[in-house]
Length: 397
Image (cartoon, rainbow, N blue to C red; front, side, top):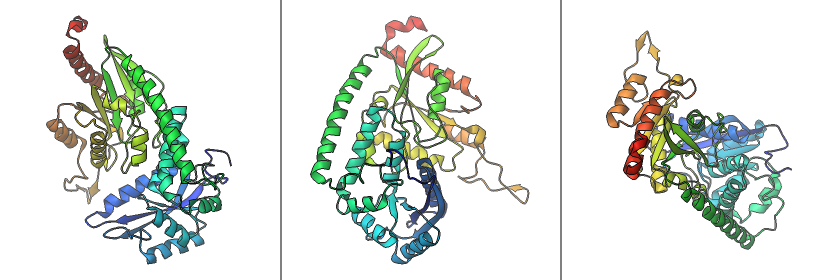
C-alpha cells in the first residue's frame, strides 16, 4: 500500500468511544466527541456511532467497563466497523487488551492526530517532525505491536508502511531512528534560528489559536498572499512568515500550527522549533472561532499551551472571528430563553470581553466585517512596539 493512503477502501467506518467523568457535563463530553468526529473525518474516516460510559476514572485494563466493551464488540461485528477510536491516549496495556477483545483496529486520540499530521506534512522539515513524534509514541508500545500491525494491513493509524513492512524492528532500532531524527531536526533548527536572526529590525507578530479557527484565512487577508486554508483540522503545519505593510509600517506576520485539546506532548516537543516563532514574537494575535459552542474552553486550551511553551506572558490581541456564523436566536414559546453562558447575544459577548481587555475585536474574515478596524488597531500596536524598540525611526509615523 502506498505511503499516506488510509486504506484500500474509499472510507473507513469507525465508532468513537469516550467516558464521562465525575462532575463532567454530558454537553461538554458531547462537544469533545464532536471534535473527535471531526478529527476522524479529517483523517478520512466516517463515524457510524458514538459510545459513552459514565466512570469516575478510566478502567485500568480496558478503559471502559467489560460490559460496555462487549456492547461495542457486538455492534462492530454487526455493522462492519473497521476501527474503534478512543477519545484519550490509551496505555500500551490498554491498547493490547482492547484489541484482543475487539479483534479489529483500535486507535486512540494521539495516534489519530499523528495520522492527520502525517497526511498534512508536505515539507521535509514537517515530515521529520511528525516522524519523530510518531516513533516517540510507538517506542513504549512495541511489545506485541508488530503482530497487530501485520494483522491490520493499513487503515488510519498505521502510517501506511511505517510498521507493517518492518515487523522485525526492535527497541534498539527505533531508539536509533529517534536519535537520527533528533539530529536532523537540530541541524534544521540551527538554520531556522539563523534565518530568524537575519530578519533585522522588523516587529514580529504571530497568529495563534485553536485549530480551524481561521488563522490562515486571516493571514491571507492581512498579507494578500495565498496561504493554504480549508475547513479541516491542522490545515497548517509549517510556519508561514510573510512581510505585511499597514500604511507605511512593515512587520513580519507568521501563521503557526493550531492548538487542540489534549495535543500530544510528542508533537509539542518535536514542533518546538516551529513554535519558536510564537516564543520570539513581539505580539500574539489570538484568533478565536466565536461561532463554536465551546470557544471559551478553546481559549483556555490555547492559554495553557502558550504557558507550556514559554509564551504565556506575551502581549495578546484577541481576534474573535466568524461572527457571521454566530448563533443566538433560540426561542421557546415565542420567548427568548433566560441568559446563560451558552445563550448570549453577540453584543453581550462584545461588552463582556471588551470590558476585560481593550485588545479585542470582533470580525468576520470571510465577509470582511471589522477587518478595517482590526487593521487600524493592529497598526497602532505594532507602531507602539516599534517606537519603544527603535525610537530613532519615529519619523516613519
